[in-house]
Amino acid sequence: IFFETENEAVIDERTEADDLNCSSSSENQQSSTSDQSESELYNDKFNPSVEEKIKCIDFKLKNLNLNPAKIRSLVYEKESLTEPKCSDETELAFKQALSKHENPTQCPICKKMFKNDKGVKLHKSKMH
Image 1 (cartoon, one colour):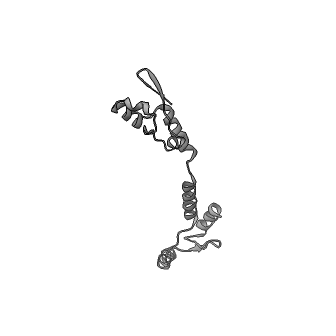
Image 2: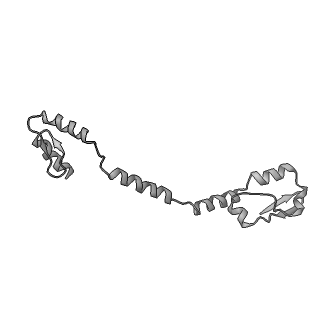
Image 3: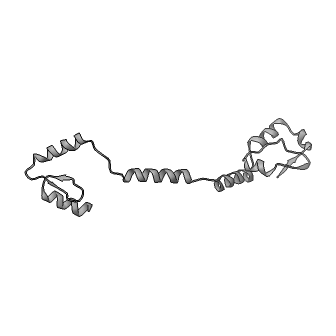
């Protein structure tokens, strides 16, 4: 990378490690840059060029790790597929409420209770 000062071009001798860290430091510049003003050094350090920004973004995209998101999605998918468990008291209250109907029936496959045969048939056609 070239920096132009008054009448001469100065080569920035930053290492690739500095570029990979996405930082633009002026410590590694040649000694001929010592005549630069503080504002120029500040601009070189905190205002990287477009090429440096592109290198930084490129490096970050190459090393982007999507595994944590993929693992989280698998865990949540597994949790969402498990059927929630209700307590025995809740199940008993549910059965008592259904027993007030004329002919409560139970699904032979999953043992859920319905208020009549029509509900069981509809349930079987949709769920099983």
